[in-house]
Length: 577
Image: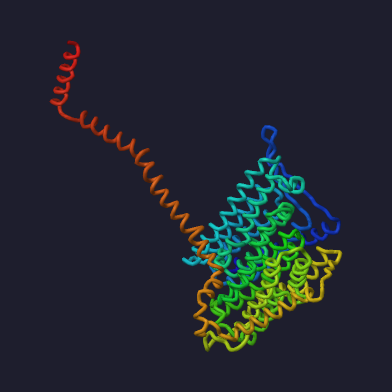
């Protein structure tokens, strides 16, 4: 155990030091507006050089700094959370490989090297989802891996299509070839890849399923790695997405994802799945503003969301840890009396998620909604933006009502406490960032303050919608709808909304089960059936039969040879006459 403690502490110090260095570099690059390409020639063959290119600009450096900062705190937190695990070394190494794959993806301006980081994320996420080895984890891991394979194939096809250009360094061609058909096709394929990795409709079901992973992994995956990889890739490809019909399509899909996730979270009772659906909702918000042509805003929300979402998962992990691994919010209650520090962090992160003024989430969320009010939007997109914001406050207050208010509902002789100081240090550090990280980032990313002039009602619409959403969530919690006989009349509607619009069934059967069964039937009928009967097996059976006859012929007695010799002589005489 001493070695496991030392590996957590060493990883924490190492990652935190690199994070601070990269943040300082990012500030330097912002101040002087620098972009640096580093090219490393791997080998040169017949005049064709294979070069590894790395891109360092303020965006990649700042994103890497945030990823490493959150990763360091998550690893420090894991020291206590995974205390009883005898394989904690393996867990920490997997997390470090996961972070390394994300680093690789962030600094790559080349589709080939992006694919290496992209597939690294997919493979290691599968290993982490099935970390607790049981049937549920295996199924969740398979759903995660196979859903993401669709995006991997799309990225491979984009790499093949990039052969139309001079190299795979897509960043050189984005502005020049923005209206070409080839770049439009590449943009569509990259958008499909990003939709699978960032779990947009209809690929949303793997994200709540991936909650089978340990909670520190969830904190890392849902804040700054894996799911944000798709958004980051589209931020790099934003010239192609926002200038044509791809952007309109993405705006609709991301808006529906945001709405579906907000609606589904109000019917969910699993603590981690509620937070996972809130991640899905925020990813939809990032994608939607990105599709309208505001990549800086999407990146701003990406960073602020990473801070409070990691904190939210870490608080959830502390609660689950104290609740003896129970995740059902109906068994919680009155936690703020027994776990005051954890509850404080939980409330701060929840308020930041809702966009409470002057917390981290407010600076990005409010700006996104005001810019969308200022833009030319149809009524559907406008409704999806603001209604989903109300739903966010609704499920957040419902979660607080179930977990923090009232009496403790688990067991009578249960003492909860805040004595896990290793976990608390990580949470309190992130809480400080969740409070003032938003204003700090807004000063850095938008040095000239953005002023959005709107009519008074439109300006206040965000606060009005949030207030109504919070009130409705509180009333919904008090009504005990699930125990009312009247609610049975609407059980199909509840089932539809609570099951993410049936996407888990579509993904499980449409993407995984039926294609795999079809592959099995094709394999049995063709590869192991007709092609065997009329191919190798047929020739094998013929040669076996004929060689058997010849063997029998050769192994028999002298009489057979004499008779056969006589027959051959007789036939020869007949032929000569």
